[in-house]
Length: 381
Ligand code: GLA
Image 1 (tube, protein in one colour):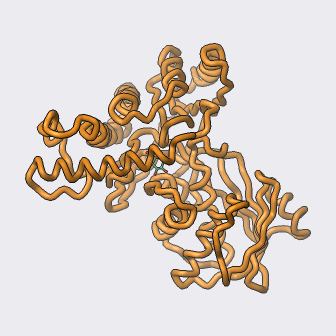
Image 2 (image 1 turned 90 degrees about the horizontal axis):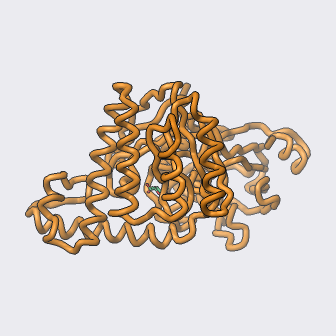
Image 3 (image 1 turned 120 degrees about the horizontal axis):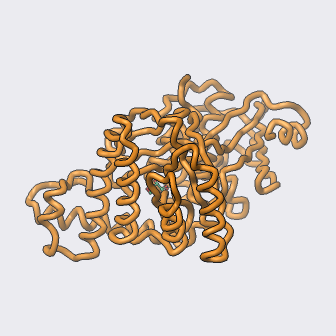
């Protein structure tokens, strides 16, 4: 428990405790930075912050996961090249101050059970947790969507990872037993109920997201390039792949570089799938939802080329189990996790069979989590 850790490190109990969950994306992959649609859920694995106000401008922070402590002054916040785990809090603190929120010094301990670099957005949880922590400790009254943007800015501009907005959004605004349908262009969102007779089962491949950042940047550039090419072909101004219709993309086939076309085709078709997935989820048609998840995986594997041998193996094993509705890779790809929708009564057997099958097939130990969608750090009751 982080409260006890705080007490041991700082000698008194914390004043506030804040919890920010990791996430799994059900469908809508590599669409957020193309102004598209996503459908993630916050999971019941989280990063928790415990802290107490100080009377000066010093921050003393302890990471339970790294078993390390550092100090910095709010008057001079710079990136720490050694204790990189502290940069999320530093970045959030710096941008809050830059936006005119005067912070106070604090003693802080944080840690949790979102596996690191496993594709379940532990970094977004650390950033959103830091933002929610300052919000609660100092009564800043932050607008939740502003807090989401600030947390993402810390990741993009301070930590230096060019992610979209999905992970921070869901960690802040997820809701228990619901997925969140987000339009990444105007940031309008809606919570969609998840039935309790199906479970979200996450399979971690045991492979950290190596390559993910460099390949992610390549995909970002390819999407931008595709926008330029398709704009010229359809003869109208297109700002992002969100503006490309299924008819446009079919018309562009063979008239532009095939690799760029396939990247764009994934994004356009994934947006369509996500819109349909939300509709069928609301109608209770989980069979169709599962088919759309399966199609999403094929598209990520063939058109977008961000899957891996491990992820494909997990998906293949999953689809052979009884009670499974759909299986796909989730997150950026190149390692990390798959997400599976499984009938509740089959979930435990599914977890055991996929875990064993994976070890037999590749000699790797995966980890299987049967998840429950949970509340985000800033969702109001
Ligand atoms: C990572 C990024 C997200 C999103 C996904 C792919 O998780 O942080 O913004 O782009 O990859 O859907």
